[in-house]
Each structure stands twice: as C-alpha cells, then as structure tokens.
Image 1 (cartoon, one colour):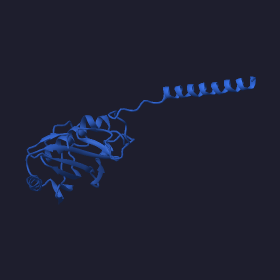
Image 2: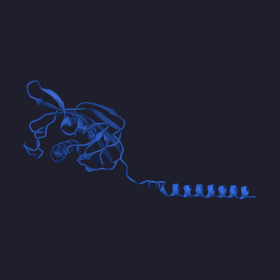
Image 3: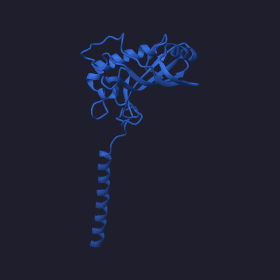
Image 4: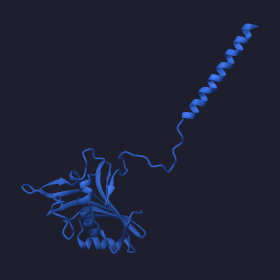
Length: 200
C-alpha cells in the first residue's frame, strides 16, 4: 500500500514538474515579429546605404532615379541620342543601355575645396534606362574618374572615394559634398521635361 501511494505521488510530481517547465518555456518564447518590422538585410540585391540617388547594391556604387513623363520611349530615346548622352547604346522594347559619353560637372554648383574629385574632372559610366508607362528609371554604375592621374590618364573608380572601408556604407563626407554634385549632374543629364520621384 505504501509503495502504491509513493509511486502515485512521484507520478503526480513528475506531471506538475513537466507542466511547470512548459509554462516557463512558453513565457520566454519570442513573440512573432510583425510583418512590417524593418530588418537588416546584407548586400545581396538590397540597397544598404543610399542618399541623393546613390546607393550600394551588391558592393557596387550605383546612382538611380525615377522620372515621371508624358513622353513616349521613342521621343526620349531620340532626345538622348541627339544630345549625345550615350557613346554607344543598345535598345530593347522597354530599355536603353550603354556607355555614356565622357561628362563633367560644369554647370553644377560646388566648392573646389569640398569636392576635389569632381573639380576639373571627366567621368565615364554605364547607364541603363528602363521604361514603364508614364515614367522611366535611370541606373548609372561603373562610374570612373578618367583623368585622376594626369601623367598617364589612368582611370580610377569613383567608388573608392565614396565607400567606407567595409563597402557597406557611404562616407558622410561623400554624401555631404560629392554625391550632391554628381546627383545634380546626372539628374540634369537625364531629365526630359520630367518630374523626378522615388516610385517605380
């Protein structure tokens, strides 16, 4: 009899202990993360840092902007060709792509002291223009400073002056100065009686 009572007490105690552990586990289990909660995403097709049209995507510096327009793709393409914006261009039903003609920052307001890499400098770059009804998006990448080394005319990547060492962020000094100048230059270059926005 005593043995039966003892076994029953032990079994009951085990049940209570297991129940208590479950309650404790439920208390500390993390609550679901809301669907709209922002999370950090590594640089794999996702912009990590951006300002003034500049962003880092897949460890590459790009400039991107969307323009609203009532003009047709044909009209915009004709304008870009006539203006000599592209050195060479390939066309597709919904896009243009190609290397840009050498360009500079003349006409943009900037300080020679604060923007030394933009002063009296020629740039080269590759551009992609995507078209949708009512607007188009310009993506510029592979931006190179053409005459940074005056002795041998060697090119140097513009990203070298934009990136922090970790290649995940843009330098604050670049965002304050160089980025604003280049944003003005590229926006003016690709504007076609348009209104710029961030929607695509």
